[in-house]
Image 1 (cartoon, chains in turn orange, green):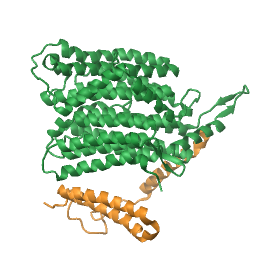
Image 2: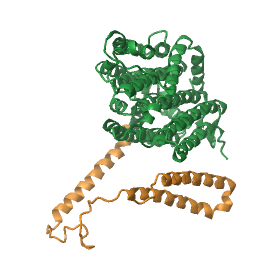
Image 3: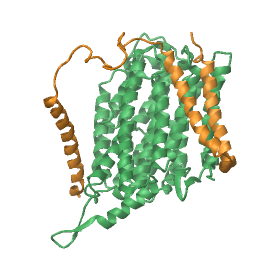
Image 4: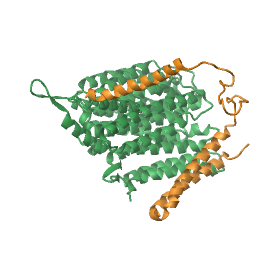
Length: 118
Length: 499
């Protein structure tokens, strides 16, 4: 029985080994020549003008959350609409329930003022 | 087309939770009374629906994924009872909240729906989803008083530990799935038993056969499932979240957590171990016996819970350790793995619901009135509020297991089941620990009756809180003297299992 698990042991050892090996290899063969442009986050991109650790309005979070919910709703709606005829009444009822639940959520968010930008 | 009639009670409660949410949103009167009473009515109606639509199962193909058998009905009654009593005792707490009052009750109902799914689930994924639906609203409820540091801390601790334990449980379930290739509990039961019978015997030197286990991964799966589920029951050594969370959470939520969530977790443990893995319950399985693992946990839990409870000065912490110890007693019934064992677990939970909900209701009332939370603050309560003190005495003695209260009968049947199953050492330990527990339970009574103080607080409960105290008081007394009807019901629940 324990012999069946030898593959797991080999996998753990080999997996760890490969990671350690590649790190060590790059450590030995890399040329070290850091200069200012090279140490920037995006070496070939936009020049950095500010730190990324800044405060931003946490309303973005609520908006993002609501957006994701309705985005996913749309993802569900498209395949259903395409296969509408073959799915029939049962799928229609299920979809109505699904949309109703999301609508209740939207009403809730709206009434609680989550959509207001103050 | 799937037959969904067994789901009607759950669906009804779910719709009512949304209704409560909307009710609060569109009512102009800023009062807790309406959503709270609607929630209580919804819980009662759900209780009737549970009996009306019982007995059938929701099937996927030929396999049941959701059963409304007598076992789930019995535990649903306990869960709904706990929800009803928690809502009843939370009028005062909710009244002092400045915002999000309607959501409080809606979240409580959502959590109740999750617990109902948990006790009925016969499929691993449904079981896990039910567990998540139970705990996620509870994370929010525990941290509800967000300006209170203790409540926020409790919420964060519960979230982190809850997430970790869910992950462990899920890993255990996935290993079980890897072993059997199915997520249906009845198929897993068959496949593991068949696999064991065909591979489990190897010939030894004497020409007879030795039993071998299912292999290390199976033991690991068992351990992970036990660890994941006993986190929810606060069994030692997975109990460390309980005292802090119980202390910091709003008192009605603490009560709901200690009864409802425990009942649901217990039902899941019974379904998985007594139902699905019954073949691996005893010592005849050298490596894969969950009975031995759980017996050790139960023993450690009873000893640690009871001994640490002695040192507590805060009454909610004391009750938290007491509920840890109680979970240890209940686990003995699971280990017994017999009809009597399952029946005694159900009855114990039923009796425990009344005593614990009642005790927490009084603690909540007292803290609301006086702002005091220590055991020593209860001094002189027998003079100022004799009825409250008498009720508290009853709840404490019922938890300690003193006749003629319900807690005594519950302990009696648990111990009987364990002796029948051959766990005499566990019963002796449990009896010793019951004596230890009497010390700290009786200490509360002693302080209320014997210690003088200039305490002038006269506690007058509001109508819903009074109703809660009346119901729990009657329950503790009635089912201690006349336990037969509930015992018969609890015994019938065991017919859902193979033993």
